[in-house]
Length: 226
View 1 (cartoon, rainbow, N blue to C red):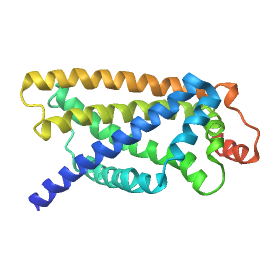
View 2 (cartoon, helix red, strand yellow):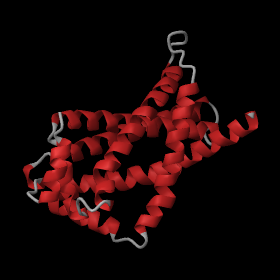
View 3 (tube, rainbow, N blue to C red):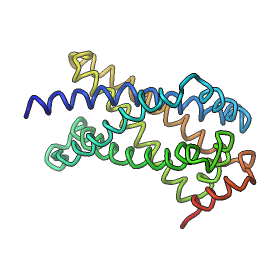
View 4 (cartoon, rainbow, N blue to C red):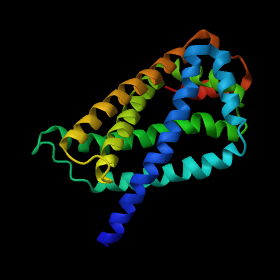
Protein backbone atom coordinates (compact mmCIF):
# COMPACT_ATOMS: atom_id res chain seq x y z
CA UNK A 1 0.00 0.00 0.00
CA UNK A 2 2.83 2.37 0.86
CA UNK A 3 4.49 1.57 -2.45
CA UNK A 4 1.29 2.30 -4.33
CA UNK A 5 0.93 5.59 -2.44
CA UNK A 6 4.53 6.52 -3.29
CA UNK A 7 4.06 5.94 -7.02
CA UNK A 8 0.64 7.61 -7.02
CA UNK A 9 2.16 10.71 -5.45
CA UNK A 10 5.00 10.64 -7.97
CA UNK A 11 2.53 10.50 -10.86
CA UNK A 12 0.45 13.20 -9.17
CA UNK A 13 3.53 15.40 -8.92
CA UNK A 14 4.61 14.83 -12.53
CA UNK A 15 1.13 15.28 -13.98
CA UNK A 16 0.84 18.56 -12.11
CA UNK A 17 4.08 20.08 -13.32
CA UNK A 18 3.91 19.41 -17.08
CA UNK A 19 0.22 20.08 -17.93
CA UNK A 20 -0.12 22.88 -15.38
CA UNK A 21 2.94 24.60 -16.84
CA UNK A 22 1.43 24.32 -20.33
CA UNK A 23 -1.94 25.57 -19.10
CA UNK A 24 -0.48 28.55 -17.24
CA UNK A 25 1.95 29.62 -19.96
CA UNK A 26 -0.62 29.41 -22.77
CA UNK A 27 -3.28 31.20 -20.70
CA UNK A 28 -0.89 33.83 -19.39
CA UNK A 29 0.39 34.78 -22.84
CA UNK A 30 -3.04 34.63 -24.49
CA UNK A 31 -4.73 36.67 -21.76
CA UNK A 32 -1.90 39.19 -21.61
CA UNK A 33 -2.50 39.92 -25.27
CA UNK A 34 -5.60 41.74 -24.00
CA UNK A 35 -3.26 44.13 -22.20
CA UNK A 36 -0.89 44.63 -25.13
CA UNK A 37 -3.32 44.54 -28.04
CA UNK A 38 -6.76 45.18 -26.59
CA UNK A 39 -9.83 43.36 -27.86
CA UNK A 40 -8.43 42.75 -31.33
CA UNK A 41 -5.09 41.54 -29.99
CA UNK A 42 -6.83 39.08 -27.68
CA UNK A 43 -9.10 37.84 -30.46
CA UNK A 44 -6.07 37.25 -32.71
CA UNK A 45 -4.26 35.32 -29.95
CA UNK A 46 -7.30 33.13 -29.30
CA UNK A 47 -7.68 32.48 -33.03
CA UNK A 48 -4.01 31.47 -33.29
CA UNK A 49 -4.17 29.05 -30.33
CA UNK A 50 -7.37 27.40 -31.50
CA UNK A 51 -6.13 27.22 -35.08
CA UNK A 52 -3.33 24.84 -34.15
CA UNK A 53 -3.67 21.27 -35.54
CA UNK A 54 -5.75 18.88 -33.39
CA UNK A 55 -5.70 21.45 -30.58
CA UNK A 56 -8.75 19.93 -28.86
CA UNK A 57 -7.16 16.46 -28.76
CA UNK A 58 -3.89 17.93 -27.47
CA UNK A 59 -5.74 19.85 -24.77
CA UNK A 60 -7.76 16.83 -23.62
CA UNK A 61 -4.84 14.37 -23.61
CA UNK A 62 -2.03 16.74 -22.69
CA UNK A 63 -3.73 19.10 -20.25
CA UNK A 64 -7.28 18.34 -19.08
CA UNK A 65 -7.05 14.62 -18.25
CA UNK A 66 -3.68 14.98 -16.43
CA UNK A 67 -4.97 18.04 -14.57
CA UNK A 68 -8.17 16.20 -13.65
CA UNK A 69 -6.13 13.37 -12.10
CA UNK A 70 -3.82 15.88 -10.38
CA UNK A 71 -6.78 17.85 -9.03
CA UNK A 72 -8.84 14.92 -7.77
CA UNK A 73 -5.89 13.09 -6.24
CA UNK A 74 -4.69 16.41 -4.83
CA UNK A 75 -8.01 16.84 -3.03
CA UNK A 76 -7.53 13.36 -1.57
CA UNK A 77 -4.02 14.30 -0.38
CA UNK A 78 -5.31 17.56 1.09
CA UNK A 79 -8.04 15.66 2.94
CA UNK A 80 -5.46 13.29 4.43
CA UNK A 81 -2.88 15.97 5.25
CA UNK A 82 -2.07 16.78 8.85
CA UNK A 83 -1.75 20.57 8.78
CA UNK A 84 0.05 21.38 12.02
CA UNK A 85 1.09 25.01 11.60
CA UNK A 86 -0.13 25.76 15.11
CA UNK A 87 2.48 23.39 16.50
CA UNK A 88 5.38 24.08 14.10
CA UNK A 89 5.17 27.67 12.91
CA UNK A 90 8.04 27.94 10.45
CA UNK A 91 8.17 28.87 6.78
CA UNK A 92 8.17 25.49 5.08
CA UNK A 93 5.38 24.15 7.28
CA UNK A 94 3.23 27.15 6.40
CA UNK A 95 4.09 26.61 2.73
CA UNK A 96 2.97 22.98 3.10
CA UNK A 97 -0.37 24.08 4.57
CA UNK A 98 -0.89 26.82 2.00
CA UNK A 99 -0.04 24.39 -0.81
CA UNK A 100 -2.97 22.17 0.23
CA UNK A 101 -5.36 25.08 0.77
CA UNK A 102 -4.39 26.81 -2.49
CA UNK A 103 -4.76 23.48 -4.30
CA UNK A 104 -8.42 23.21 -3.27
CA UNK A 105 -9.08 26.83 -4.29
CA UNK A 106 -7.26 26.30 -7.60
CA UNK A 107 -9.29 23.18 -8.40
CA UNK A 108 -12.58 25.05 -7.84
CA UNK A 109 -11.39 28.15 -9.69
CA UNK A 110 -10.05 26.36 -12.78
CA UNK A 111 -13.13 24.10 -13.00
CA UNK A 112 -15.49 27.09 -12.84
CA UNK A 113 -13.42 29.19 -15.24
CA UNK A 114 -13.33 26.36 -17.80
CA UNK A 115 -17.10 25.95 -17.42
CA UNK A 116 -17.69 29.67 -18.02
CA UNK A 117 -15.46 29.78 -21.10
CA UNK A 118 -14.28 26.58 -22.78
CA UNK A 119 -17.36 24.49 -21.96
CA UNK A 120 -19.66 27.26 -23.20
CA UNK A 121 -17.80 27.21 -26.52
CA UNK A 122 -18.13 23.43 -26.79
CA UNK A 123 -21.85 23.67 -25.98
CA UNK A 124 -22.27 26.21 -28.77
CA UNK A 125 -23.48 28.99 -26.46
CA UNK A 126 -20.62 31.28 -27.50
CA UNK A 127 -17.87 31.26 -30.12
CA UNK A 128 -14.13 31.74 -29.69
CA UNK A 129 -14.62 35.27 -30.99
CA UNK A 130 -16.96 35.96 -28.05
CA UNK A 131 -14.44 35.02 -25.36
CA UNK A 132 -13.25 38.59 -24.85
CA UNK A 133 -16.82 39.79 -24.33
CA UNK A 134 -17.47 36.79 -22.11
CA UNK A 135 -14.54 37.68 -19.88
CA UNK A 136 -15.80 41.26 -19.77
CA UNK A 137 -19.19 39.99 -18.64
CA UNK A 138 -17.55 37.93 -15.91
CA UNK A 139 -15.02 40.37 -14.47
CA UNK A 140 -17.31 43.42 -14.55
CA UNK A 141 -19.32 41.55 -11.93
CA UNK A 142 -17.49 42.61 -8.75
CA UNK A 143 -18.21 39.32 -6.97
CA UNK A 144 -16.70 37.30 -9.81
CA UNK A 145 -13.81 39.76 -10.14
CA UNK A 146 -12.94 39.19 -6.47
CA UNK A 147 -13.31 35.43 -6.95
CA UNK A 148 -11.02 35.52 -10.00
CA UNK A 149 -8.38 37.56 -8.12
CA UNK A 150 -8.35 35.02 -5.29
CA UNK A 151 -8.23 32.20 -7.84
CA UNK A 152 -5.28 33.74 -9.67
CA UNK A 153 -3.24 34.28 -6.49
CA UNK A 154 -4.02 30.76 -5.24
CA UNK A 155 -3.22 29.18 -8.61
CA UNK A 156 0.08 31.00 -9.03
CA UNK A 157 1.15 30.21 -5.47
CA UNK A 158 0.19 26.55 -5.88
CA UNK A 159 2.16 26.35 -9.11
CA UNK A 160 5.26 28.22 -7.90
CA UNK A 161 5.50 26.51 -4.52
CA UNK A 162 4.67 23.19 -6.17
CA UNK A 163 7.56 23.65 -8.59
CA UNK A 164 9.92 24.32 -5.68
CA UNK A 165 8.73 21.14 -3.96
CA UNK A 166 8.93 19.17 -7.22
CA UNK A 167 12.58 20.09 -7.72
CA UNK A 168 13.37 19.04 -4.16
CA UNK A 169 11.42 15.76 -4.16
CA UNK A 170 12.86 14.69 -7.52
CA UNK A 171 16.42 15.36 -6.36
CA UNK A 172 17.07 18.27 -8.73
CA UNK A 173 17.79 20.91 -6.09
CA UNK A 174 19.97 19.24 -3.45
CA UNK A 175 21.24 21.11 -0.43
CA UNK A 176 20.18 24.31 1.38
CA UNK A 177 21.92 26.70 -1.04
CA UNK A 178 20.25 25.25 -4.17
CA UNK A 179 16.88 25.13 -2.45
CA UNK A 180 17.20 28.70 -1.20
CA UNK A 181 18.13 29.90 -4.70
CA UNK A 182 15.19 27.94 -6.13
CA UNK A 183 12.83 29.59 -3.63
CA UNK A 184 13.94 33.04 -4.84
CA UNK A 185 13.47 32.04 -8.49
CA UNK A 186 9.94 30.72 -7.94
CA UNK A 187 9.04 33.71 -5.79
CA UNK A 188 9.93 35.93 -8.74
CA UNK A 189 7.91 33.68 -11.08
CA UNK A 190 4.94 33.96 -8.70
CA UNK A 191 5.11 37.76 -8.64
CA UNK A 192 5.51 38.15 -12.43
CA UNK A 193 2.83 35.61 -13.38
CA UNK A 194 0.35 36.97 -10.83
CA UNK A 195 0.98 40.51 -12.08
CA UNK A 196 0.40 39.51 -15.70
CA UNK A 197 -2.87 37.73 -14.90
CA UNK A 198 -4.09 40.63 -12.75
CA UNK A 199 -3.29 43.08 -15.55
CA UNK A 200 -5.29 40.87 -17.92
CA UNK A 201 -8.31 40.86 -15.59
CA UNK A 202 -8.20 44.66 -15.42
CA UNK A 203 -7.92 44.86 -19.22
CA UNK A 204 -10.99 42.63 -19.66
CA UNK A 205 -13.02 45.12 -17.61
CA UNK A 206 -12.51 47.73 -20.34
CA UNK A 207 -15.44 48.88 -22.47
CA UNK A 208 -13.78 47.72 -25.70
CA UNK A 209 -14.46 44.10 -24.69
CA UNK A 210 -18.21 44.59 -24.42
CA UNK A 211 -20.38 42.86 -26.99
CA UNK A 212 -24.12 42.98 -27.59
CA UNK A 213 -24.51 39.51 -29.09
CA UNK A 214 -27.33 37.41 -27.70
CA UNK A 215 -25.02 34.56 -26.80
CA UNK A 216 -22.81 36.77 -24.65
CA UNK A 217 -25.80 38.50 -23.10
CA UNK A 218 -27.01 35.08 -21.99
CA UNK A 219 -23.69 34.38 -20.32
CA UNK A 220 -23.67 37.91 -18.90
CA UNK A 221 -26.92 37.03 -17.14
CA UNK A 222 -25.23 33.93 -15.71
CA UNK A 223 -22.22 35.98 -14.62
CA UNK A 224 -24.40 38.57 -12.90
CA UNK A 225 -26.25 36.16 -10.63
CA UNK A 226 -26.12 37.60 -7.14
